[in-house]
Length: 379
Picture (cartoon, rainbow, N blue to C red):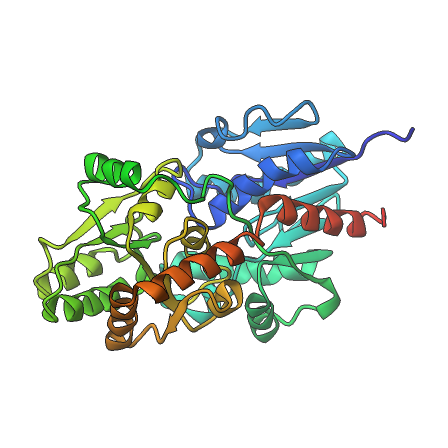
């Protein structure tokens, strides 16, 4: 029997409070431990991720690179990672968030490009971070033997801005964790009230508070609903990001202080209950490479209103009401339809459950493993 080959996954991009791409990285690794029985793995992680990556099995070794800041992680990636790969005899590196070592690599690389947001919506980022990711993503795409993207929409954007060869792009949809499913409604309402101060029947939006999530427009839509005489509350779940103060400014300008609750970051263990307790999930994002929150809400049986742009129509199919994310009136009208039409809400619930059932992290890991095998010449 030939010796088992060693694959490295760079998980150091996962932040202390993982969301979006961080959730992808950690969920992929956990699923890969269940799917791949043929290779050994070395996982590079920052100290805050070690607990999540424990108990992966004997074929997985997790390397602690320390409690590094984001900037220190970038330096480590560009100066030390490649030499450790060579020392260990790694045959393939998978970088899970846009960037790879750009000067030297001792083995082939696979890179996940979640989206082209650094090019499509550069205003979402500070100047330094934007320029770093634009340059390094461009270089990483040219170096990588294979490029993993989560959607056809991201593929189109990648071709528009970075022009990689089509044969190197592999569409690998993300998954829904098994914890997202319908739960006892009364128990979820109780948890939402006791832990987060949320009343029954609230509207919900989930995602880091930064410009691309378009929360000021959501708040204007919520103002429209209140002006119709509706007794509603809105919960916005997500950690503060760059320019999150703009959400507070819109909140006060619209006179919504008593009706909107910013919960901050919510651990994944509590998210299913918050989805289940909500009457409608609203996600008017301006741009997504995939868009996990609408899919998670659908998996919990919650009716969804989301944007008709970027990858979102591709991911949700016909299981939601799609709206122009810049039209507050259209957002309000879609939410009102669900609130006023129980039959529509039930239809969206059932279709959403069926749609979400088609996405799993095991499928994502299996598709990713197929890419590894192709790069390594094992197919």
